[in-house]
Picture 1 (cartoon, rainbow, N blue to C red):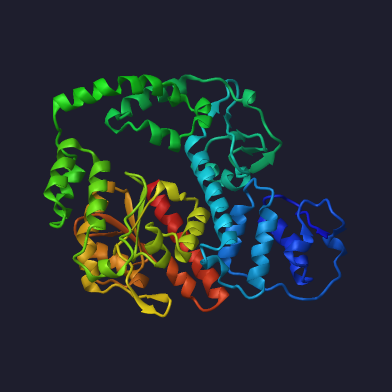
Picture 2 (tube, rainbow, N blue to C red):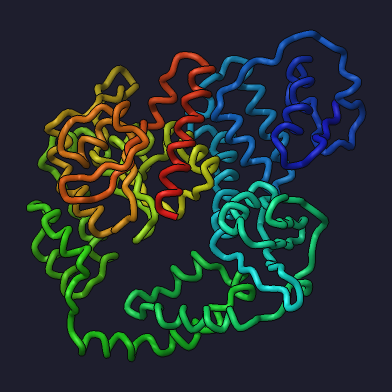
Length: 479
């Protein structure tokens, strides 16, 4: 057995430095112990002079995320994947049902979800005597170093420290440094700012949308003791039935001016009952669910008969960004979710590099069914035509009206055409804010699948960097 022990447990460069000598020497995964406790060390491997093979960028992105997981087997699992990729399985990550790929994907998903929770549930408190703010957070995985940059960007003008059981991060307004673990007791007690925050939270709480089970799923109880607003939740839940009854008694209010400006977006294909329900009750979640049901039941296009199922959008209401892609791919068609195939995995990595969490965005497609040509056991993607786009455009318009994003980001030519109502070259419009005929702001960029089709690694790396920069700019527009 060969013992391998990366110099740092969560950094990609450290794991790569440990894995390269093993791969170059042809050491199979079963001959490696990644806990560093057995027999020979990687330093004792004979030099081979072999150049390590290049691996797909999406593997490096996956590895960078998985290394932050607490699973002790993460180094071994990644080396097993690397071994297979280097030995002929270049498209390993495209096989989502492969047990190894599935496990790594779930680990990466858990890390990204933990990062989203950190962004949402970390709360700073001012130091009582110094110009400094402190926060305590207990992440499920080792994400502090990776996510500290998010808080530098968000709170660049504030001096702060984030304390966790794994380590601490400190920002003095110019330099970010990491230190030893902290203690919850080191964070100051609640101050006047949190009293005001609780009052604000209570005033914006919507009792008609109270869903305790969904609340506990999105905001697990383990975070509650660090969130000032959770002290108000028991009272607000108790008062909810009476407040809802009072809202019903008052009747409907006029829609906002923004929604009135968008009224002509309403498609003729949407049922009148749903329109009336949404206008009367103001329940956008119910309106979105009704629209989804109508899309799933759509049989007026030949694509519906060919595809496994319709794929509707997913994400929160009132998001800063709504991304519109072209159409579902093979994996999306089978799973019924948008952006879960190879292009979706690349997109997730680009979002992360841009400092955006998938959970804060709404993702959908211009065309809701997978269009393809069968070829043996494979289904070859076929681009939607003008008729396909026109058929689904009313659904897309209504979906965007209900979700109400601050900015729509179109991914590729099909999405841009669906939003603008005419064909526009993405290369000419890319990266600039445009306005639809109805006045909605649109930010065009390329589709992630374009990056997968580039012929050589250098062009893929260059264009991937441009894509990340596009996402960063779109994010800055709404922050």
